[in-house]
Image 1 (cartoon, rainbow, N blue to C red):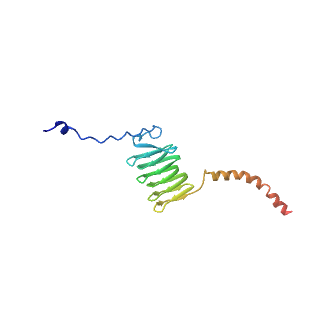
Image 2: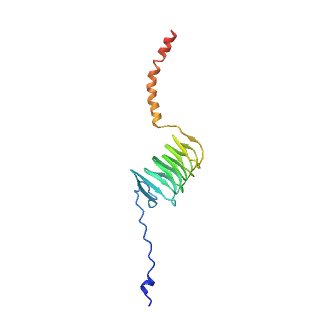
Image 3: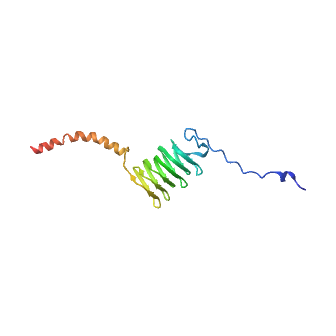
Length: 179
């Protein structure tokens, strides 16, 4: 005999995915539904997925991993920016540290280090005290490794006042040698 209940039942839908976490509006006002926050030790890491496209200025106060496309300017002055393998960036980048596994077209300025890993690509100039380019990576541009604003330049600034008094006694022995 035919059982109407079984024939009319719609197939069971897969369990719904959990809703994306809510990110405070201050950290990413326009793409909150596409950003996932993960705890990485004591630091938060924000992840922008590969389907996200951002055009404009991106600022933040958290470490950031980008798998999507960004055009414009990225500023994470005190944090780490990671460009994932699917990430395609056409922007000026300012961060504490930058790790490139994907593609960057634009200049990178870092206060600590820039790493271009295997299959990573950078077309632009790099300004950073430390730069690492892995075998198999692509780089076209210039590198400026001056240590402006680092502890090394502060110690040089401290050494200058100390050397000024030392330079005053130096003419005395030279003058004594001329007598």
